[in-house]
Length: 210
Image (cartoon, rainbow, N blue to C red):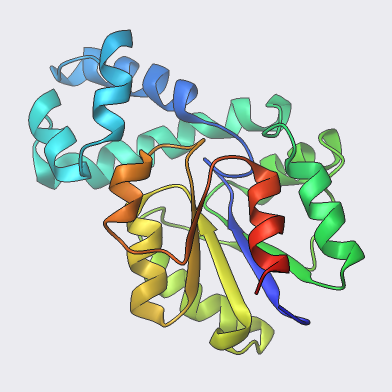
């Protein structure tokens, strides 16, 4: 790959927040009259688009941004003490050893992130971008490049949702989908990422083959 930059989506890639998201959604559902997510529904939901998840759970589409922001708010207390995905810290070190820059984009607060990173021996990113809204991934990618004066052709964006892949495609940035986050491999494939990783080491293997 040369001296490029790998940009990681935070929630779902660096840390698996799916169980927490389900817990927070169910708390919201209890107050708003939505269907709660049952344990045996989690895998089924991972194969559905966000719009179809809303239909299944009785969430009006226009309320989805509100639900997303409420879940984001709930992350802030739990995020600092969460454990990174197994193998992610090693991957980051391996990338740095190969002179590849690493960055992240997150909608978590700076305070929560500043606690999470050293707790997981991951406080050595070259680029950090804090987004206000978890639903502005396309704009965030463009602003990330502008802020750090990076060329889109030198970037690879790593995400766990179809909307990550679509945002990267729209921005003209190569993407990698990971299967340990929210969306299933089949759903990620719909966005046609450059690669789909089942474990962190797969990302390194792909990059070394570039």
